[in-house]
Length: 111
Image 1 (cartoon, rainbow, N blue to C red):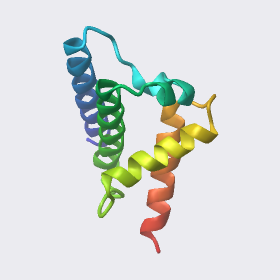
Image 2: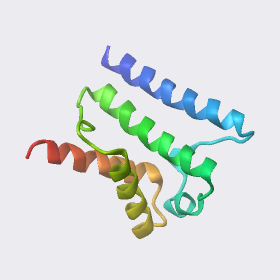
Image 3: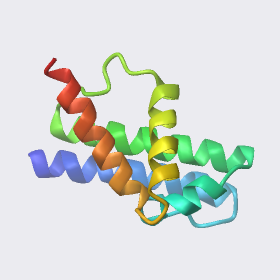
């Protein structure tokens, strides 16, 4: 059952990204983007895509693991964290940053 939830959450995330990308006539596979690419996507449409990807990724993991590490978190704080991470780690993938953010959010839940 847990595997099914993970697969369902992943499908929902991928579907929402692909639907948005289809509207823009481009393919988006954000998780494999480097932080350098993340930093260079600065037009309003790209910023919205980045925010949607990050929130979708984090929400999908929270749902799949049944750990509400997003409770009480401000969206702008999450985006700022990711922007700071990418600024310092140009060669890393954005999924690396999102996974580290999840780890930190989970750690902060215990305090």
